[in-house]
Length: 130
Image (cartoon, rainbow, N blue to C red; front, side):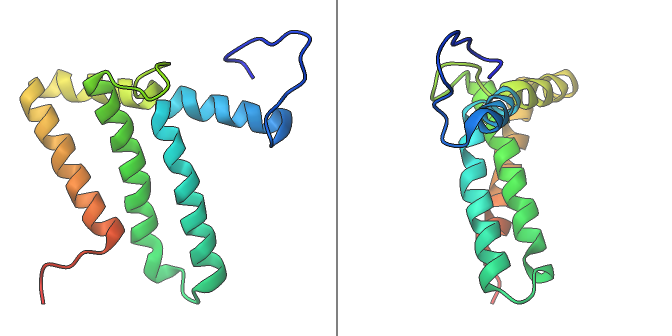
């Protein structure tokens, strides 16, 4: 991949050379939040194979993507990364810079946490209204 050079060594990624490039690109974009793409694709595969109507689950998948993006932003805001590579990735860095250029840091954090709560409610389909 383009993250690390392993001159003279074979690619040890289970998905091969293409998989190593995709993984490196996702880690560049999202940092450790890239790990959340695995449950996203597992959820999408489950919905595709076991559910009849994909239209009713569209908002859940969009909310899941929102959770991934906001996780990247939160990691950049807190300077936290599981692998200690690039907290939040490029996406987290850019969105954080835009938010902090528009709002002060407290309002930026409040906005991100509020949006994360909204996306989690949509993603997990919690209903507080009976």
